[in-house]
Image (cartoon, rainbow, N blue to C red):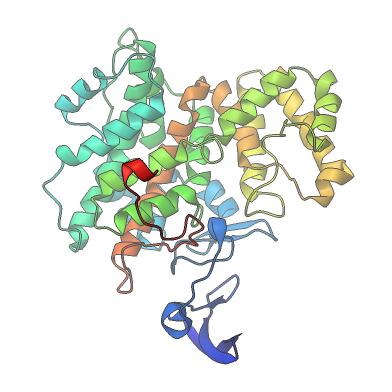
Length: 430
């Protein structure tokens, strides 16, 4: 909201004022929407380091405190006291569900988990060795060709149906991508299982015998979903918002978000972290790689440490560390080579002056890859799991944007540094 405060800018002796807007938490912002009209200038902010692109009531991050809030609730409390579908309801509706709302929502999602049978044929158009994220981009984008019965997104009911369909069908689509890649038959969803247990059934079950999900492992994966459900205006969320600002259907917007998430600097970071641990190989080599990470002339980077936003311990990393210990304990993998290696890296990073000074604390990717590997999920599927969870946040942010009376199609400006205007010469004169 605007306040009585203003920011003054003086350019070539001319002074102009801009209102200051204040939020519930975090930095206040200067409303510069009239900057071009008042001064003939734009701002330059590569990477949007200091630019608020929207007003949002969904998620708040305090990077200095290491705090993450969903609709005002600390992530630690949500991970402990709520399951993923409760968090999904919270993100969409702004409040936690009542017992009745929870039951009805879970029932609705269960009844939407199957996909159109013709969609199965889409998978056959991909090579068996295609990266699952490539498959995800194509299949999710294709959903708009199957579910075009609700396309009036000014209608709240149409938006809710689209939200429910995507949240329900993403586990089925992800599991099918995995099964297609491994050559196993697709497993249909089971309505007697809860959301996360059903996903594990579709991932790891076969027609040969009944799959019985382990409650400890189900809880671990459900926690992973919760921790990844939303994360403010990150690259993929901004992509979804930008795509949606044109009026594109939500299936296309989520497909765009998945494509952005695929990047190794974003959703692929946990896969890169696990690959780094495999490269280090043994606790005895940790010192060598720590030294390389400090060397400015060495291209090696210590993956899983530091974050663009968090300048303190990522709260999700603390939760993921506990989940990791629970999973490895349940599976009898306490002495797992990679887990021991990760704990040693964490210990050194938290004590070494170099990492402490630069505030390179472990982030959520540091442990999530180890947990997923222990669950039997291959590294190529890590980002698909991320996309499954983040779809809740993407859809919430998409709906918030298109229902904002101030929203406009996204149109960033640029600082042009190319050739000055010139005329085309005749071919003989070139």
